[in-house]
Image (cartoon, rainbow, N blue to C red; front, top):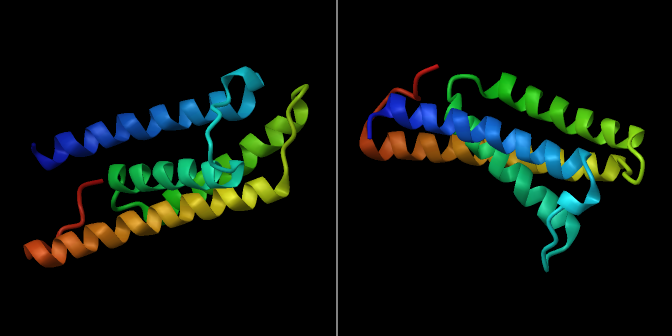
Length: 126
């Protein structure tokens, strides 16, 4: 699959994940998925995936992606404070922010490792 097409797929997936994150974070608790894992692990893992997907979608824009995702995390948590039955916590912001950051940096490391192994010097298209 051509790199440009792969990047386009990652971009659609990234924004779909943000929409999904909004739905489970800032709508009725009925939409919140329940797993057998602790909520903090769920939060970390979800934002790790979002961070990694955004990093693959926009490989030349690591810092803006990181700052945008951190702003989204803060915004979603603050929005919860305005919603009946929802509670935004600073602790949750930190867990989600660390997950997003870890996902972004893990994707950057994977891209660099792949580039080193394949002998490629490009890091993707913007």
